Image (cartoon, rainbow, N blue to C red; front, top):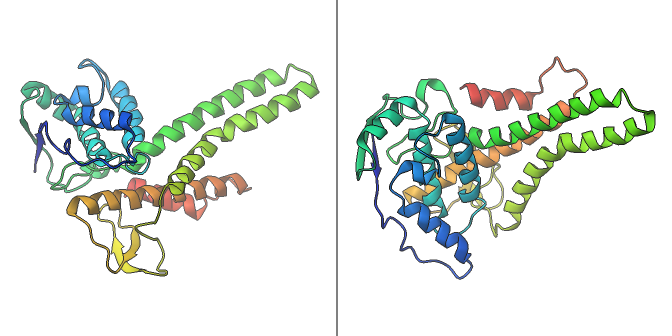
Length: 281
């Protein structure tokens, strides 16, 4: 399979903006779409290591994801960022890209698998339209935040043993807040997205006007759209990315909740089993 990286300076830049578009965000999106060099797209140096590339990608993915950024052109910018990451995060593809530089078209041979490379869902999905959104990468961002909070909580506990009881109780409350702050932040982000949506384009259950059953091509997640729902090919790609993102968001929250209330840590809740099933499939 051949991946073609096209550096079209006018790609979607002249799209008509709506009155509600934030002028600053419009400028940021245009800057992304104008960039030719993949390193510039991810805002990293050519000497950047994988950790720096992944860190920059996560920041940009959160910033330009269409669910959070409703500005015209955000989907195209998000896709271009994902495309750059899929090349620069792979050692072989990165070497090939460095060899050709930022020419108008770079051909990179890839395995004949249509979506996941070597069965690892953390690698980007490929199709005739190029790499698409991988929900697991965004979840990693929140996992690392929670891991960091857990380390801080453990350090505080060590210090508490050397203090008086009143101080220990007060610090335990602070530690508890730190522990769950990433989870609360994630919940707020999802909730804020919902508040700005006028109407859902899909439903995970058959209800009301949502009667046309569909299934995402990557993870096979079932969802429903309205019978008269129509969109472009790119629209379907963005829709299915959104379906998987929201489904895994809900599943992750359910898993966290079940683990918190689960007294027997040896038994893994069904929600967690289902979530990890998607990671290993």
